Amino acid sequence: MARKITQRELRNESGEIMRALDRGETFVVTRNGVPVGELTPLRQRRFVSAEAAVALFAGAPAIDGKRFRTEIDAVLDQRPRPRG
Image 1: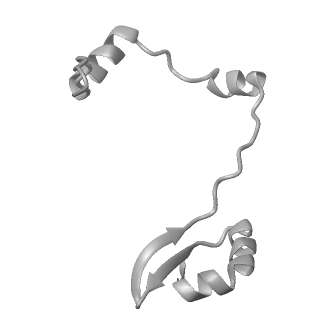
Image 2: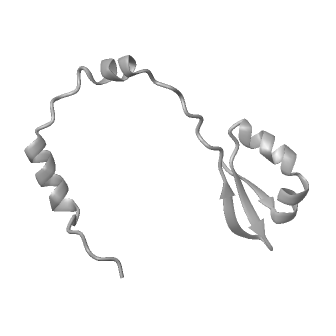
Image 3: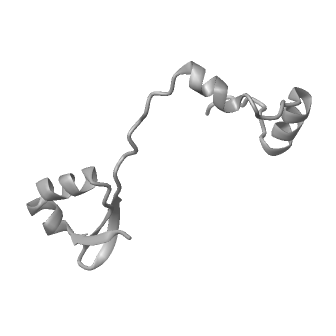
């Protein structure tokens, strides 16, 4: 659950708020009682070796490339258009 803080709290207590973000806390910033933004911690990236990735997907079913392309084309319009 996000903790509500005011714009003034964000300004005056930025150091503590940053430490709380490091701990995984989320904040909703309000101005005059109206929510105007949300501060959420970024996910920490973890390195995964190629061997681990290959092992993870080793048991996955094979993908039928033609069927995959047909399904993607049914959802996305991939015709290029000039930028205006």
